[in-house]
Every structure is written in structure tokens, then in C-alpha cells.
Length: 185
Length: 185
DNA sequence: ACTCCATTAGACCGTATGGTCCAATGGAGT
DNA sequence: ACTCCATTGGACCATACGGTCTAATGGAGT
Image (cartoon, rainbow over all chains, first blue to last red; front, top):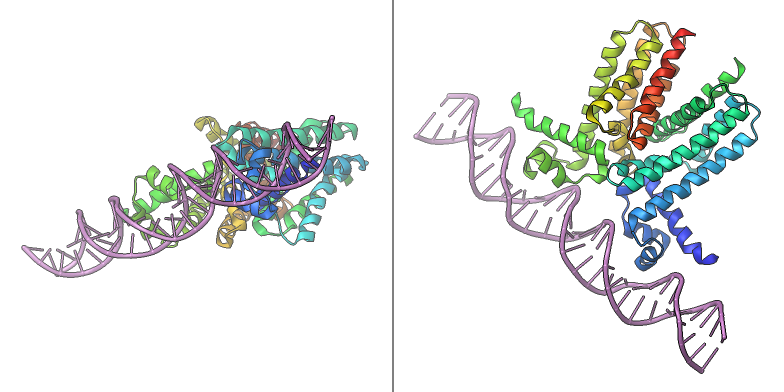
């Protein structure tokens, strides 16, 4: 089972670098150097090379975010407060790291115009997030769960982008405030 | 005055390519080939090279979007209908081109972690859009123009990203619907 | 002790990258 | 006709890219 440890290391390292510099901004050698693994190891685990690695890394990082979303909503008693807790959580990790990294999906999506498989991996993650949020929106009594879920994902991505531009969690925190205000109308 | 025509051509060509493939996904040779200009010409107009070109292209494209926003809001009689008209306009150009290109700011931002000047160019464009929208929000009687403006920009960027992932204007059109519904509450 | 094979190690390849440099060009000003 | 200089043309460079290939390694199974 621990045979997968180097594969996982590659996934984690690649995802972090992609979030910092974007798919095309990161070289294979850089990923290898950061993980301390040789080239042969990468091509053993991901025979189709960089693209396959990025595809897997996107799914992996998407799953991590979804787990966070699931955990937050599971503890929420109404939709607006659950929704607000998500940008708040992202803003917290920003404060903790002292740096804003791009959303893993956004960081890969730009290369999606060139590589359909990458685009589909990103699309799949977004779709999966949306389903997850819509499920909880319905459970918490929101009148149009699907629309509310898409709207939340959109605002998350947009605020994340603004935070990236400003290198500051402010946009995410203000989004959280706006979302939770709605709870007390 | 037409001496600038090649400089402008470089700007337009580069901006289009960056939107398709991202900053790091486009090579100098590709920009040059697409514009039919030689390397010397690029380094004459942009002595600091690719980065300076991208910086200028971001400002140029940002200005183009701002002009559209200004024009739409100038014709609007209330904030929600003006706000809704913007994603609608973007969705229209998507339908017309048959392809979703990334927002010019988003396409450059990923490289902004590496190059502070690029990040600042992107930040400046976003800030300028926000000021423009806030001005009209105030004029049209919105109670908190600054917050409304940031929220609109966030949703625009988020919906643009989803549209990019799906290669379909749907997310932008649904955002427009959601924004204009608010008009008739 | 031996085999076997999943995995690692890293040299190597062709190509593309961003950038530099300088000679040629050609239109405007006189 | 001549000069001048803003602009172009493109050869050239070191480096980095993604990818391929084969030999070494080492632990598990017997």
C-alpha cells in the first residue's frame, strides 16, 4: 500500500506547484526536484507524462476541497451560514500560509484550451462540487438548490481570483460577510 | 500615428493568444508568427520583452472591457438590469465566436505569482473595473455601491471561469438571469 | 540462495524557449 | 539628392523543456 507513497508525493508536489505557477509555468524538472524523485519514477506512475500527472493532481486537489465543503456543510444548520463558512475557511488558510495560491481548478483550466482531457478534469471537479453543495442546499431547505449551488461556486471562484490578484484574503472574507448577511433577512 | 499600428497589432495578437493559452502557454515565436512581425520589432516596442508585452496587453484588454461596461451601464436605468447586461454581453460574444476564451485578467494572473508587475497590472485592471461599476451603482441608487461592485466583478469572473470549463456560455447566461431577477423583487 | 519484477535512477534526445545583437531598410525633413 | 533615425529583419545563443530508454536496485515469494 505504501508503494503509492511516491505517487502521492508527486501528486501533492505537482498540485502545489501548479497552484503557484500554473500548468505551463511549471517544468517537469521542477516537480521532480521538489519531490526529490527521478524522472523514471514519474513516467512509471504517469506513463502519459505531465498531462496525466496534472489530470490526476486536479482530481486529487478537487477531492480535498470537496471534503472540506462536505465537512463544513454537514455541521451547518442553514444554507447561508454554511455557504459563508467556506470562503471563510479558505481565507483562514491564506492567513496561515501568508500567501494566496490559486484555486487548483483555476490553475489548470487555462491549459484546458490546449488539452481537452485537462479541461474535462477541471469541469468534472466543478461539477462534483456543485452536486455536493446542491445536495446540502436542498437538505437545508433552499428553494432552488441547483441555482444556489452554482451561484456559490461562482462566487467562490471569483473571490479566490480577486484574492489572488491582491495577494490578500480580503475578497474572500467580504464574500463570507455578504453570504452570511443573507441568513438574517 | 500609424507608426503605432504594429505595436497595437502585437498587443491585440498577444492578448488573444494569452486568453487562449495563458501567459506561459504562449511562446514569443508564436506571437510573432501570428502577427507576421519579426523579433526585432517586438523588442523595439517592448524592450523588456514578453513580460512588458503582457503587462501592456493586460491593460489594453482591461480597458476594452471597461469601455463595454461603461457603455452598458450608461444606458441602464437601474443597477440590476445594467449588471445583468454584462454577463449577457460576454455570453453573446461567446456564441458569436463559438468558443470561450478566458477573461484577459484571469489569463495573466496565474503568472502573477512569478512576476509582481504582471500581478499588479491585473490588480489594477480589476480595481479600475470595480471603481467604474461602483460609480454607476451609486448613480443608480444602490445602497452600498462598493460592495455591489465587488460582488458583480466576482460573479463575472467566477461565471467566466465556469463557462471556460464547460466551453459554453450557459453559466454567464444563468448569472444574468439571477442578476436581473433581483430587479423585480 | 535464488528468482522475479515493480520501481528507481538518470543519461540522453530533439525541439522550443526568451533574449541579444547588429545590419538593412525606407520614409520624412531639408 | 542626401541625411538621419525609427523601425524592421532575422541569425544566433544558452538554457530549459517534455519525453524516451535502458541499466541498476532491492524487497517479496519460494
